[in-house]
Image 1 (cartoon, helix red, strand yellow):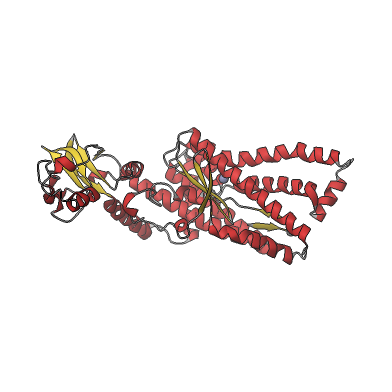
Image 2 (cartoon, helix red, strand yellow; image 1 turned 90 degrees about the vertical axis):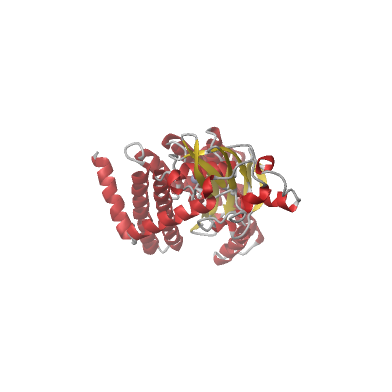
Length: 434
Ligand SMILES: [Zn+2]
């Protein structure tokens, strides 16, 4: 949250996207059954956000730390020496309206994503701004561009809509010039000031979110453009590098002007950009690996004619049911244990199994198969090659692959921010040199 001069203008950076992609594919594994261990800690799950409503099926959440916002407003007013009920009310109403605009910004992203059939997990309001978790990893650059543009477009629309409202307000008050309105603004008092502040905040939201730096929308827009001339991985690296240069600029500007919030935003952008770069690198690596390499043979699955207890050999787990090398069903761990508890030991595997067969091809990428598993809400999937059972790919296998890839990258990847910026810049020169 950036404070501009006195107590009232609060420009909120909307880190809409840092978690937008955190909700994607490999970072968190949303919706995996058995409370599957996520390969990456999900910072948003530490404290549960409250759902306050739904818009077009999108859950609107408020994070518990949001309770700090009114306290911050009170503290700001105190610092500014405006310690009276009217000023406090003004600050509270403005803050409420600002978060309303942030929410509309995120809903802009969400609504555009829904237009293209892209899944929107939820929108959460944090003291720092709004976070929309949207699965755009599979989206084309054009769609990603449209989704990124939709948020700032909402704030532009609000700002434009406020102009006639402010004009009408001025006319109603009998103002013949701008100066009485400006007096109101300087005094930070009354509906006129509220409207003008809101206009300014919306313009600041547009400006900040269009900075070409991850996790801001501008970073995504930039990457979508770059993807037209190079691959997504390189485009991300270039966008990350540019973002870090801008973050450096923000930090320097903060030091020079004494606006410490700029320094905080700069640091936040550096970390968010690095994590974005890491996610895309992992994603690219996962797209190159075929799932066949990582499928477990698991003694070729189990025949449907076998009695249930046979499926328990080797410990309770999800077992693929095969007949003459072809997959005919799945016997889920929970299903198996329940059947045993209910005294159905004498039944055959075929009588209890799940007959709905979904398989992955051995040549499919680990990335695609993981997404399929998330979509189906399944922890294991049989892998086939030319129609024949080749092995089972599970959530545990995925986490194993993920860790291996991550370790490999940490070893080879340049550790320092400076090295990353240098790498990004050289990538950029190469991309434009084509
Ligand atoms: Zn946004």
